Image (cartoon, rainbow, N blue to C red; front, side):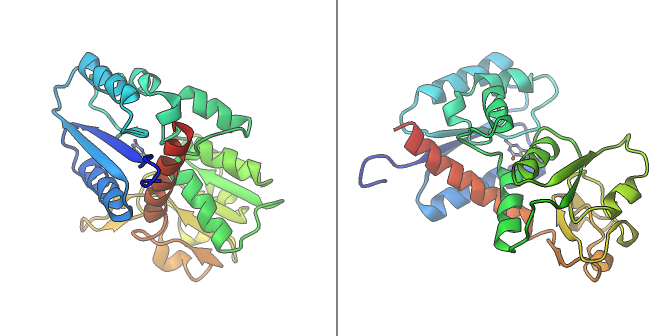
Length: 257
Ligand code: GUN
C-alpha cells in the first residue's frame, strides 16, 4: 500500500491524563509503528474545550494522510462524547462508534466492526468454537462492548442473552451459557459456581485487584478448571482489540483511497 502511495494512517486523540488511557494510546501508536502504519498522537490538556476538540477532528477528517481517527474514551466530564463521535467522518471511524456505523452493524452491512467485540469473535473462530445454535450470555451492556458483542454473536447464529445490573438470577443466567462473555469491569465477579462445565469463557474485564495487579472480571484460577476454553487477563482479549484496530485502519485506507 505504501508503494502505491496509500499508506494507512491513524490519528489517536487523548484528552486529559487518565493513566490507563495513556497506556492504551501509547500501545496503539506502538502497534502502528511495528507494522508500518503512519500514526499521529494528539495529547490534549484536560481543559480542552468542545470546540477545540471538534475542530481537531474536523481537520483530521480532511487530512489525506489520516485514514482512521480514534478519540480515546472516556473523555473528561465537561466534554460531550456523543457530539465528538458524531463529528468523526464515518469512513474514518475505526472504532465503529459513530451512529451511522452502529446502525450498519445492526443490519449486518458494515465497513468497520468495533475492535473489542470483533477481537472476541476472532478468538472464538481461531479456537474452532462453533457459535451457531449455542447459548451465548453477555454480561454487560455498554455501547463499546456488551451491546455490539451481543449483535456479533447473533450474526453468528448464537442464541443471545444480555445480562446487566438489574438482571434477576445472574448466576443462573451465566450457568446456562455455552459461551460466556464478561464485560462488566468488576474484579472476580464471575465465580466458578456461575460457569457450566465445558463452557467457553471470554473475559473482557480490565480491572486492578487489591494488590494493584491487572485482572479481569472472571475468577480465572477457579474457573479455568471448569471451562473448556478461557481467556486470561492480561494477554487475552486486550491484544486482539489492538490487532483489530490495525485491521480497521488498513481497511479505512482502502475505503478512503
Ligand atoms: N476506551 C476503552 N476502550 C476503548 C476503545 O476501544 N476505543 C476508544 N476510543 N476508547 C476506548
